Image 1: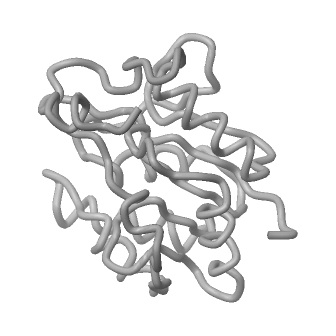
Image 2: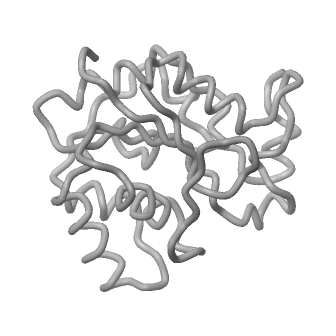
Image 3: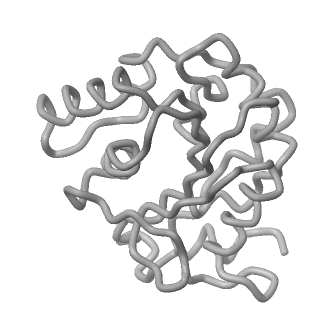
Length: 182
């Protein structure tokens, strides 16, 4: 992607199914948060933000906690000028920068892009339209909004995942963590 973009690691959740903060789990000697930040840097992010609160990182806390990824996206988007952004979940350990570059390329000429049927990673134009869509959806569903609803609200496109589908899985439970290839 020739246009600059901001990378965002969504790490503001409570990790209730895991029973501990997923962002701080270590894989290959680094936290999942550090893995995700480096992944976005490798993909070419001009700046990497973290949705959540972690010392040593450029963080933006969720304005309204407990609203899932859309709550994190809304909080980060409200603090940004118009830009392109790539949002990844902290627990998607199989992602690589080439898959993210494919997603970013699909954003050209569109408001948002994701891999078919997958909520994250998600590339989007952060602008007044996205900010209005997140606010409208969150007002209608104060208990939480799905990424699928947000993607539809901004007329996002779906890209084929191809052979990358396994890389789009996230680690939600201790069993997922134990079964993670190392």
